[in-house]
Image 1: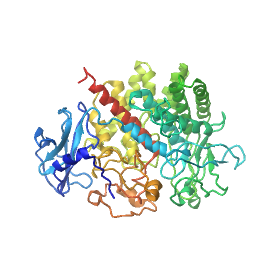
Image 2: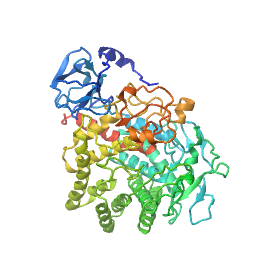
Image 3: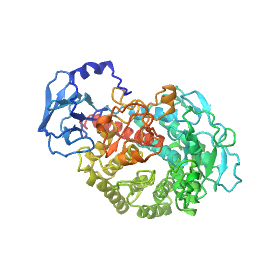
Image 4: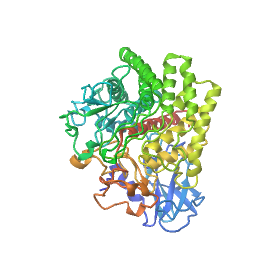
Length: 600
């Protein structure tokens, strides 16, 4: 079940690294390590044991090139009775190596400035595959009858054009909030790191250059759909389809679950409670529209900034829509949660001032109107720290996005006093996580709630943004630990991205119709990630399809299954992948900068 594709170049190297013992394991970042970056692995033993030292071995000749004390014993974590954090940051010579501690050896890995090269572009493959309307992977179109309205000021079942966008995950629902957040991360990745992206696909996602970076093609695909979901100044829509979609796995085409042929419902941002599981006799807790409106506004405003020189007419349309969406958020403060019909599960977003802060920051950037800056700072003070930071649990998507992007964008433009205040907010949140993380060898302080990998990518970005704005590297090891976790330095020793790295241990049986029904790869998709054992045991309808190859590494604390039957830990998501694209672009850029002459 587990896929481990080995390039021929790596085969002799893998033979050189001895097989792991059944009792102790060394977990590494399978993508590799930057020469000047933090470099650490984790040794874990399934039974009580101690470790004195470790070695870094050159895989070409089997000789030790670095030896260091094992350091502090961190004690048990998850399945491991004892753990140590193996730090080899002071070694910077590029090459191919493995670690040895006692009789335990790690898989081979590279140290090099290019270990993240192409990774962000690779993950764009998943977003192209998630396209709704014309799908370039299938070379076919789907959901071309979307859709009919619900909860709006117009009569229910009014037909509107809402074709396009991306499917949210392995189902085919579409949410404005996750889509706008995805668009923002793609645009920001290009704005901040344009050199890491290539142009190998056209605007439709088919192979062939169109003189536009693929990441911008993808962002514009999302922007086009957001424009359809905000068709006039006082209309804003929140989602297409609902959990009736979950009645069966299928390749996207024509869904007939909704009572109007092949049309799907399009839920209006009414700012009032909407259905949340009919048989549970619940309504969601919507109180306004600002949580959605703010996300629309910021995506449109950043789109204007990035695209104004390439397509001024389109960019000006985005600028206008940024203003009208923001006005709706000001008019109707509060949260617009998603709707469900069959189950109680929704995106239970509970915060909105962060979204309006980001929108105000981006509107200030394009208008230089000081009132946006003042409003943004007021919104920032209303939520100084994203509430999940330091928390042990949260409802599904309760505080979204998982990072306060507004603090970063405000700090880039505000005066010295405001910048210092905003950086203090960031530091306070990071410190809450660090107080938990420093107690375990994995430096794990992110809670194991649903979509924990999305939180992990977002938190790493916050750490890097704090470092970039402050010039302080206090949390560099914590930031890198979260990157390492996503690529194999975790109890299961697996990367959490389908097909990345190509030579590594990555998900092979995700909760996806593409792989389950057609054996199509979902390359680049970041899976949800591990959850608390208590969450896993309480979810409805989970049943593993095959024996658990990770059984020795499951624990009452946390579980992860590479199994189609586990929708809670092994389902790829669009917005999590978009956050990862930004993070991988950041890391590739870091490697490129440090490899330049004079920076070594």
